[in-house]
Length: 155
Image (tube, rainbow, N blue to C red; front, side, top):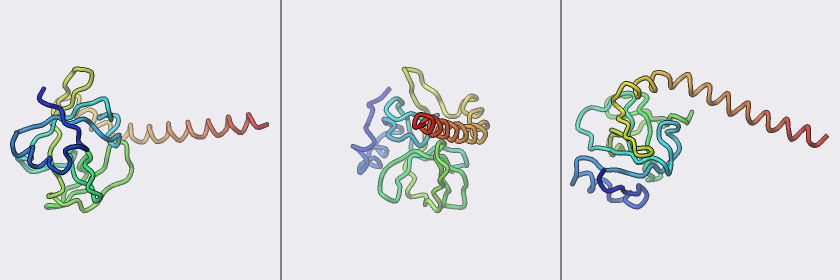
């Protein structure tokens, strides 16, 4: 693996770094792509964008507040995109192509490399809508259970 960069430390110069190399490795800095990418645990390898971007591609992009983040393309309309993280229910609309910095090609977890183009990644994308709803339900039930237990302890 090549040098691993901290996204927050190279935010202002990431385009220049990518122009000097085909791909770079970055520490994942956000949890919005859980369970696929884990903040502080995974190393993401991104590449310059060479082809057209498609739905379900995972990209590194610059948010409105100038922060870099990973997100999945949900919809493509010409040169604008709708993005959403796998663990988020909030979509980001009208993301211009010039805000998209790089394409995720693989990630490393515990010394093992996972390519986003392999069969298991495609199965993950297929199951994602169902697992996302189950995750929301699980979190909701967990919160309700905690509230109920607190209520019982007060009595």
